[in-house]
Image (cartoon, rainbow, N blue to C red):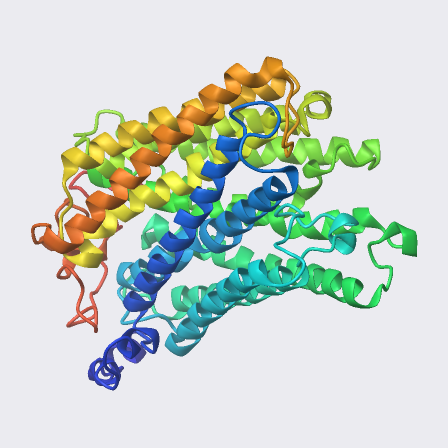
Amino acid sequence: MSENIESKPYISFLQAESKHKGIFKWILSTDHKRIGIMYLAGMLCFLLVGITFGFLMKLEMLTPGKTLFDAQTYNTFFTLHGIIMIFLFIIPGLPAVFGNFMLPLQIGARDVAFPRLNLLSWWLYVIGGIFAIVSLFLQGGPIDTGWTFYVPYSLRTGTNVSLPLFAAFILGFSSILTGINFVTTVHRLRAPGMTFFKMPLFVWAIYSTAWVQVIATPVVGITIILVIVERAFSLGIFDPSLGGDPLLFQHLFWIYSHPAVYIMILPAMGAVSEIIPTFAKRTIFGYKAIAYSSLAIAFIGYFVWAHHMFTTGISDVSRFIFSLLTFLVAIPSGVKVFNWVATLYKGSITPGVPLLFVMMFIFLFSIGGLTGLVLGSLATNVHVHDTYFVVAHFHYVMFGGTVMIFFAALHYWFPKMFGRMFNEKVAKWSVGLIFVGFNMLYFTMFILGYEGMPRRYWDYLPQFQTLQVISTVGSWILIAGILLMFGNLHRAMKKGTSASANPWGGKTLEWTIPSPPPVHNFDEIPVITHGPYYYGEEEEK
């Protein structure tokens, strides 16, 4: 393996980069680092659009009845908010951006295994995004089904459903190709001496995620095509009026979409396992337990999909089994949290901005996980399933989990990616605003849901207004924090001080090369002799 790596002439990468000029030097580049940055640019644009839709939804909920727009517009906004945030930001976010940029660096490779396939994955992502945007302006109006596309409504609505579905289908191909690339890269291009148990835990997380991408994504692709075909030809696959089974759609959709939760959260957990030892200056506690727990989450995650369907009339035996499996999948997540906290214990902790985001993540994700057990329990699920309680739980896991660690990873690897340092004081202010705004926005939803406020409703009873107002004000504080954070990073890209090769004192391979990295990554492929988090003390066995 090492001979193949050493014999690959890195001058060819330099020649490839010199073929094109201007924007084509980017959009036709096969350099994994440039592809990661292009993913980042696209995803941040979609993130801001998704946040805008969420902001408008919360403004509408300030008062009972019509505040700004009607029910149909509200349905469109929450559908677009969900589709953009899930399919165009959260699912591809950490793997596509930081997996692309950091994975080859962390394993000592020159690039991913299939650089041209990597570029194709990015183009498919862009094409899928364009199709989703174009669908907003076609006759019939934007899609209004919710991001889950539940039948039979998605088969009968007159809005533009087929094109956004086809966009999601294309995005699925991008995800599959990325997964194949990462699995092959990890197996074939590790530096000499880097065994599986000498890989950084972020690589373990991306590797586990890639298997979920490859195995689970084709299921939702088939499901999406079936909906498109049924809308076009009325075949009666899902529509009960034509002899179809709407529950079949839910099974197929959640067989993918629950593992997709781990496509979202596993890379985030991997990034946490990079940031904590760097800022605690300690070897990660329980390296193998964290590595195995990533595989365990990916594996068990395939078997819990029907906990989304407890109220659909499935059999009691099925509900008992899926409830049990839901509790079991929480165990490897708990293993990670306890190992992270143990790593921090007696560490020489530096409270850098990435670590502050991580601490916020542990707090928010723990709330999300514990409330997930409330939803996994049959007795309580029946009462809160279609309420704001689910909305709050989902956002504590996805936003409080994945998105917060996206922000943490962005600050952690920003100096390496762009060669500049950001203003830490301003960044810490943004962390504080985000924390306060997030909890005002979403914790109130737990109370609203417990009191019976149904989700997906445009209107509500007057007794819910006080909490709705608190939640809406929280959204303003949260957005202010996010905008301050992005403004700070944008200013850093233009005027920030130059970053050293290793500003945080990290021990993984990406910190051994200049910031930003050269095109060829390494002048010489490194030879690995110890684990990735060695701080002088005895490495764990």
